[in-house]
Image 1 (spheres, rainbow, N blue to C red):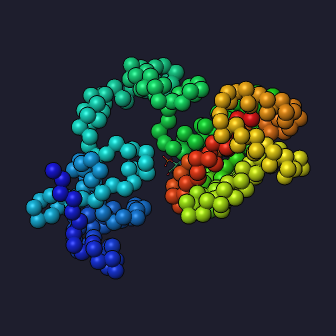
Image 2: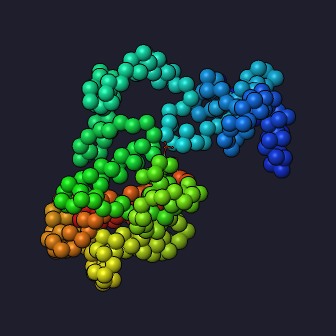
Amino acid sequence: MIRARTPEAFKDLDRPLEDCVAACFPRSHALLEGARHGLFYSLPVAFDPAEGVGCYLATVDRDEQDEPWRFIDMGAQIATHAFGENDPDLTKAILAALPAVVNRYAHSEYQTVLSLRFKAALDGLAPAGVPRHFVVNTGAEAVENAIKAALLVRARTAGAKEGGVIVSFEGAFHGRTLGALAVTHRKKARLGFPTFDWPQAIFPTEDPRSPAATQRREERSLRQVWEILQGKAHARREAFDEDLGRIDTFLACPADVEAFVAVERERIGTEALKRAWHVAAVLIEPVQGEGGVRMGSTRFFRRLRLLTLI
Ligand SMILES: Cc1ncc(COP(=O)(O)O)c(C=O)c1O
């Protein structure tokens, strides 16, 4: 059984957090003080992962019954490690594999028993049509390499020297490497670093209290993406309405996607399709995190997906 407790002093919301920590968490305070020159942090508490259990984080400080104080983990390591703390099966599996994990033969060039088991498991989860695995360590690296893959495919298939552009959305955050920053619209993260001047559309946050306004925002965002694909000079408002109308009709009763896409491509014509090829990919977070925990509607994502398939 876990006793999840924080000191009473933490309930006084007017008291500065640093004061509470200094008074109630002397070990945390001492550890933080000891490392203060090299620190970058927002929560002035020292956790002890060895004492974490399930969704409860543990502090290095202990209460009068010698139990760590516990906080509920609402972040799950920015949603990248949603495993909970110290799951016994997970810990056992990691410890069993640990001696071999350090063996990384020539990146992905040679495979190992472990990497093959891992990739077979990924195969079981990956959506249909995912051709290969490329395993990296961080979100930014994943985005960086996804961008490169999209640009490479576009350069090869379009026979162009340059891979084109990636369309992203206002409020997006995709990481801190230079490529990921090009699709990140948080001014604080971009800081004036040189980056690609790629187009962006508005992110149509779903507001359940105002379905009509949500729908208007969604259509404005879709129209922006559609205009980027068409090229401004060729974008006629009525043509967008007609295209969206056909997408909606299909989505109301979806049958053969490939057949629908083929008919639409035929209708659009070679010239317009060629123009659209300067867009290598459209990159979007289903739920914006850093952008303010904002969600788009299922309807928006289904329409966007189909628009980009065409
Ligand atoms: C949506 C999204 N993409 C990418 C990243 C970057 O991930 P990482 O910090 O692992 O590089 C983050 C990090 O917060 C993120 O929220």
